Length: 321
Image (cartoon, rainbow, N blue to C red; front, side):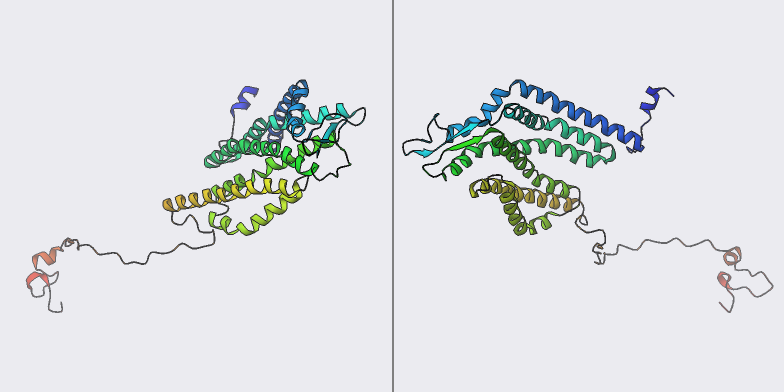
C-alpha cells in the first residue's frame, strides 16, 4: 500500500498501534527539542544582554563600586558578582542559555504535549486540554517574572545581614543557579490553580471539596514555599506563598461557579458514580378520562339469536347471563 494511502487510514477514535505511538512521541520530542535548541542558540548569541538583564536589578540593589565593601549614605553592605575559575564563564553561558531556551520554548513544547495527548481525548476533553496550553503559558511566565521581580528585594534582605567588616562576593554560577531554581519553582507553582480547575472541569473533584481543603492547602503552600525557595528567607517565602494562595482561592471560585452551571443543566451532575439520584415521589395530577369506544358485538349478540334452538332473549343474552 502506498505511504500516502496509509496516512489517510486513521482511526476516528484516535487509536493507534504501539509503534505508531512511539513514532508520534519521537516526532513531538524532536520538535520540542529543536525549538529549545533554536531559542538556546539565540540566547547564546545575546548572552551579554541576557546576563546583564538578569543581574542588573540585583547589582542596582546591592552592587558596590570595585574595591569597596559598603555603599550608600549609611554604608550598607554590598556585593559583587564574580566568575570563579577558568571554565566558569563558559559553563555559565551554557547554563543560562539553556534555561532561557526552556522557558522561551514553553509555548511550543506545551503545545506538542497537548498534540500528543489530543487524539485519545473526547471533543470536550480536547477543549480543556487546549485551554491548559492557553492558560498554562501565561501562568508559568507570570511566576517566572515574579521570581525575577523579587530577586533585588531578596538580595537586599540577605546582604543586609552581613557584618560591617565583611565583604560579599556573588559567584556567578551559584547566582544563576539560584535564579534558575526560582524561575522554575515559581513558574511551576503558579500551575497549581490551573490543575485544580482542569480536575474540576473533567469531573474528578468538585468545587466544594476543593474549598474544604483550604486549611491544608494554605499550610502546604507555606511549607512548599519555605522548602522550594533557594534563599530560605521569610520575605521570599511570603512573596511566593501569597500569590499562590490567592490563585488557589480564585481557582476554587471558578470551580464553584462551574459546578453551579453544571447543576442547572443536570441536577445529578454532582453525584458520585455509586450515589443514587433522588426520586421525585410527588403524585402528578390526573387529567380528564378519555372516552373508550365499545368493541364490536358478535353476530349472535347483535341479532339476539342463539346458535342452538334455545329461546331468544333481547340483546342476544340468555337466562344465565
